[in-house]
Length: 262
Image (cartoon, rainbow, N blue to C red; front, side, top):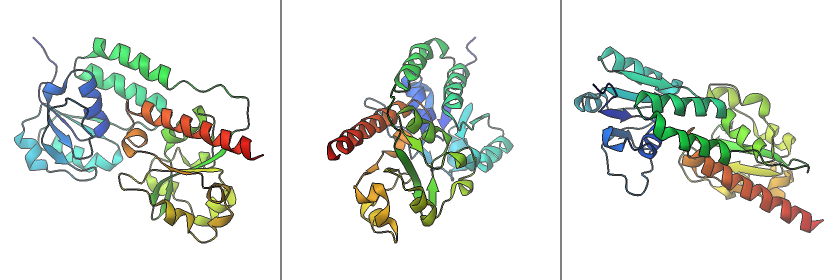
């Protein structure tokens, strides 16, 4: 008898992405609105945002498993459990925890063998760069009002790519409120490169440049401000490999420009 779930709702985009890659898309009956479908993925009902969900619609889908992510979805998870729904909640914050979550999800849906080559690819594509050069100071902005700097896995991506996270001491704080920084703190940190990804809304580079006092920041002065796609850096799953490759490319590009200007 196959005990693997056959009707799965993914309230986190990284879980939906991973199940598609594992070949379990036929088992998915509902997804979050934040999931960006991969080519060839059949459309599924969108039943949630990130911090909100249509609980009645989810229960009408009769899922035998709902996958949620993070403390932001804790209340949703609790309500679904009270309604008698099986919930698997992950709360990964680091790259190591992200890999462990991918392993867990593959096991939960009975796709362990299918996951092995993908996990190997995940590790290989996230390998740290080998560089003896000076690491450029990097500031990552996850939100602009208030300013929120990056969570742990994002800072780890920058460090693996050869950068130095200027707010590394804050990134292990689980709640976003613990990663709020002031404009003066960013100015004093004087990042040489600014990356931004505003949780799914477009980054307004001009508004970053025009912030009071920021004209003295190296990244602003040299126009080294780059937007990163949210699905590739803010969703802790397989797609982080794409974000990492983009970060490496931009850091290398910036290093070349800096070398030519000296």
